[in-house]
Length: 485
Image 1 (cartoon, rainbow, N blue to C red):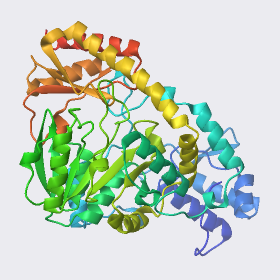
Image 2: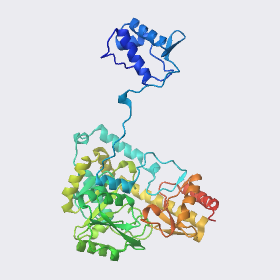
Image 3: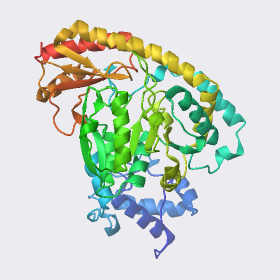
Image 4: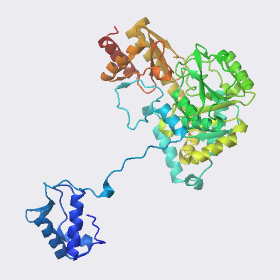
């Protein structure tokens, strides 16, 4: 259907149709060679007589705006003068963006947000991705179908910003058993991924100029909201036992730590340092944000309980997520908060997005309470252990003592230090590997400055053992062609 505006024009009706068509053609809204409706169709659309449209077409034909083919089809002429755009169509210069100080800091820290999915690689060792193919989709589908067939009335309305109460109760029970976390369900707030949890923490706890302690190397997902809030980052170095507590500043507002699997190095903070960190927090009046991601997977030794389990001063904010254990698109994470912080965090959550999607929380709650979650974790842990072994074996086979492997005892990634590659030359190896279909990822983005050694972060949970071996074999080929063998 061709939309024409016949209002506001004077003269006979056919002239008004003619002028409307001519303006449409000259403005470029009808391209050269575009087919016009038949006189019968356009007359019906405009609710005018067919004779009126025929007279308008004849005038356009006489002036060279249209041509008739096969005595039946009328089209816009191929050769037309450049369409004259009305003043209203001329783009105006955009005024300078008037951004808040918060937005300027956010864009400075984040940079351009990816707008397109990254290209798929045959052997992608990207970190932080679970095995989507082996997720129990049929079980999840049945739970979801049951919920949608007999939905509770509340499932389709507004909900509590704190989250679905049965899910919070299920999490409190699970965390007590699995991680030693001491909490009541009403201390838990459900968020849309752990990233929202970090953002809420920055909004609630930090004022411009406050000191925020972060590990070095660090997880950029937490430094970005901290800096956007105007905090001054105190980067505290990590060694073989995690955050060096003796280097902590005397005063700070928050400290972010990954004690059970430091990101990205994978080191585990021992009990002595955990106690020292908590003692410092009490002295400094600081809140400790414990990111306990992928603590579910440990392959050697006995797991340590969460830092929160040792907290006697209610200074620890515990963060957990299902993105690394189930699937990222679920977008469900949670905060376990000291009682004093529950009201302001709930208020910040409400102000941000009211509440998280209820249906996904309902399904997840049943997935946990029926035992499906822990059964899946056991299977995933066994699978990840085998893939970890395949990765370590392939690295030893192809690179021997020319690489140093670290952080392999927990989580779903490990770090490989390349002894014969200079940090500034690592990009060439990564680029050559990508040409061979292998995704390799430098540790450099997790350092505030150039790291002293060339290192790669290898995720292995989403690859089969065969793909891991094939990917490392191609990496070895890339190393040869890039001049590192």
